[in-house]
Structures are given as C-alpha cells and as structure tokens.
Image (cartoon, rainbow over all chains, first blue to last red; front, side, top):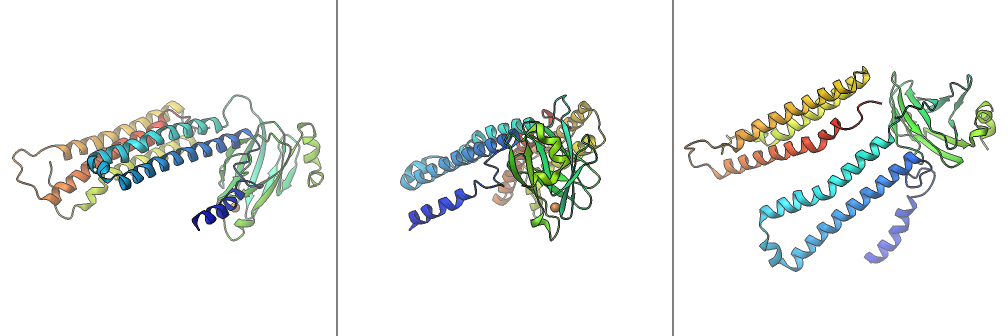
Length: 226
Length: 111
Ligand SMILES: [Cu+2]
C-alpha cells in the first residue's frame, strides 16, 4: 500500500520540477546559483534526516545502546552537534551564493525599468528611446541587465523563476535585480507579493532576443509576440 | 545558582528577547544606513556596536544566572529547574546572536 502510494506520488512531485515557472530549470547564472543552493539545501536536509532516522532506528532496535548515552550527551551531541555540523556549511554556502547574486562590479549594464501596478507590469527601456511595453519584458540574450523595479500603488514583487530570485516592488523606492538570460526564447514572470484580488493573474511574459535583434524587437514589440 | 521567584516565567524568554532586540536593531540600522547612503564602514561599525552591546547584555545576564549566592538556602526543585533553563536559553541566545547576526559584519552592506 505504502509502496504504491510512493510510486504514484513521486511522479506527481517531480512534475513540479519543470514548466515555465520552475526554479530548478534555470536559464541564466543567477537562477543557476539559486538552483544549486536549493540542491545543496536538499542534500543537507536529507543528511540530517538520515542521521536522525538512524539514531531513531538505533534506539528502537538497541534500547540498551540508547540508555547508555546520558541525557546531557543526547542534548549536546544530538541537539547541538548534529545540526551545527550540517547547518554551518549550509549557512556558509547560502551567504556565499547571496554575495554572488548582488549587482556589484564597475561595469554599468543595460537598465530596464519595471513598474508594477495592480495588476499589470510596465517595462521601459531608457537609452532605447521612449519605448515601453505592457505585460511583456524584452531582454537581450547573454547580456547582464539591471532591472530597476518599482511600484505605482502597493508592494508587489518581481519574479522570473527561471532567470533570478525575486525582488520587492516598493512604491517610491527602486530595487535593482541583475539578470542574464543565457537561452533565447520565452520565459514567464509573476508578481510574488500578495497585492489584492488580481494578484494571482499578475503574470508577465519575458522574451529573450538575440542581442543583435534586441533594439529592433523593442521598437516593434508586437513582432516579439509570436 | 539564583532561585527564580514565582510569577517570573517570562524570564524563560529573556535570552531570546535580547536576540530579538539585536535582530531588530541590526535590521533597522542596516536599512536606514543604506537608504541614506551612509559609508559602508560607518554602517559596519554601527552594526558591530549593536552586536557588542547585545552580547555584553547576554553575557552579564548569563553571569548573573550562573553565579552562586553564598549561603543560599536549599532551593526548591522547580526554582532550580527554571534557573537551569533560563541559564541555558541565555547561552543559546549568545551563540545564536553570533551565528545569525555575526555574518552581517562580513557581507556587502548596500548595493
Ligand atoms: Cu502584485
């Protein structure tokens, strides 16, 4: 019975690992670091789970072994030592990944402004004339882009799961998210901060064009909507 | 060992209240510092001071609960259990402040 449930349940769970909103199917360096971090965290959680279950099985099968370990030792080794050994490397790798995701470095990449408003996204391309697109973000492939994110009404959050982490869109304030799409094609983005009744439909399309075609593509945004 | 009087159960959250205060101050100082574009070293210095003050506070409380009263009368088992829990939550709070907030001194302050 249990075996059948596991066999049936596993493909259902795995189905969540793909699709246009999958963080585990990265299309650029930022999302790749985040996906790697996710796998590292999964490995850490699995290691802790196995260690705890081994101890649990030991005290069930060999109660005399469990009784020989003093309560203080159980607390210190099991409650402090075990998590510390697993959690310290996880924290360290998360901090290193976080540093790598920051928009640092002297080169000023291309900037695109993303403005959220219940319940749509408007993208402006300064430096490429007075062009703006609604509901579709156009990007050049293989080039780092700073998305300058803000909001016109309430707090939203900008998220393209296959390209980068999320960042808040705060009224009166700009946040910068550096992204790079390495694969040409379409991606999906969404609002990731509950912002009212239209929140669940606050999606946007992302089209990554070959860098040479980028300026043509934003000048004729409709051409990008194939 | 310091007997814990009745109705002082709130002392059980003493250590982690100090940790909570440290978290709040670090968060506020960091956000305000970045919003007003203070120099990174000034922000780091401020964060270091916040952490030092909170660690010193936990350290003082730790010492006070670990200390012995000369000639203390035989202590009620409940009092002694409470004292033990308060002492160890203080020690845990000290380690937690270092572990969770210490890295803010090393990481990039603002972008
Ligand atoms: Cu929204």
